[in-house]
Length: 336
Image 1 (cartoon, rainbow, N blue to C red):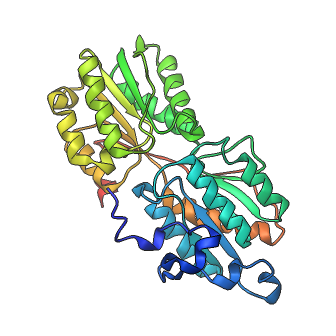
Image 2 (image 1 turned 90 degrees about the vertical axis):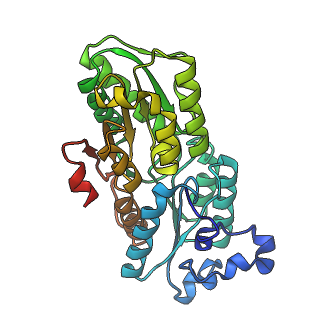
């Protein structure tokens, strides 16, 4: 799913009291400057430093976020740190944020694993003059200045419309990330609203939504368990593409008994994200629709907004990076 050994440049920074002993601090792959992380360095004319913190550096969806933020940072002449926990863990993410604040970054953009868990550290950062925004996932109760990313409820609504266009009624299950993830909850709400508006007789099975905590292996296990427990299930909505981009071969095995039903529209699968592995699965007829986000744009816009904030400019409360609805009719365009 993600080769951590080959991605040392994405490793999170160690706690500050261990910094001198950590080889990770010296990695050349991270666009950073140690002086820029020392409080007061900016007064000496050093470059501004921004940090971009995903839910986890092990989630391949964020690869394009990293590329976008670093390329935009190079264009603007600012230091960009891309770092985060190596697993999707809210407590670890908060620790990363605390370390960054203590080192004196000018601003950070975070995709909260849990919207409420970051409220305290965001408040502390803002009190120290650090500019704070969120991307991909929001923390609406916090003091963050701006959210950059998908209109998640609208994206979920588009997923529901795609689902209803194939299946006018039936039982469905939702596979989600963390139960406290604001973005996934918004997608689920939009999906259900679309089904309600479609007017069909839909039933969400007991226990849904099922959280995989952004873990591809766990998402596959949930799919297998759900299909075993509910043999009369008519479809899935994945509010994130973990099984498709994280474990595509395992996904194909997990739904193999429904392969013909998917192709004949008797079983429906709609998922978020349009990573290459997912597009290939859609192309071969193993799902019906993908709701594509624009992670590269999230990385670019996050750096732009942070830079504007440090220059005293007014920024919007929300920057919508848009979605793409991909089906068999236009999948070839996206594969190109």
